Image (cartoon, rainbow, N blue to C red; front, side, top):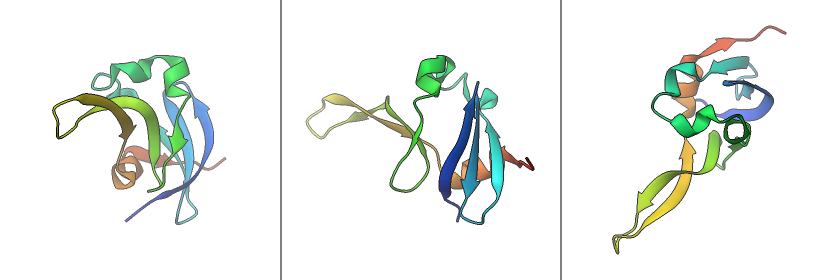
Length: 92
């Protein structure tokens, strides 16, 4: 199981991270943008942080239905294993 230790760089629709194994990897989000259109906005995409898991997250981009039926904003995050499989080793 992978986890992200740090964010190194954020570029348009690409984030470079360091995984727990010390590998620096570049994650291209182009394939995910159609499913998460809010990430197409540069200011939203650039607001990425690490959560406690740790993996990449964007605050308030997902929705959660509470037990009483109300819908509230929730963080959008991705499995770090999925992000690892989408990423390419970055040698710079």
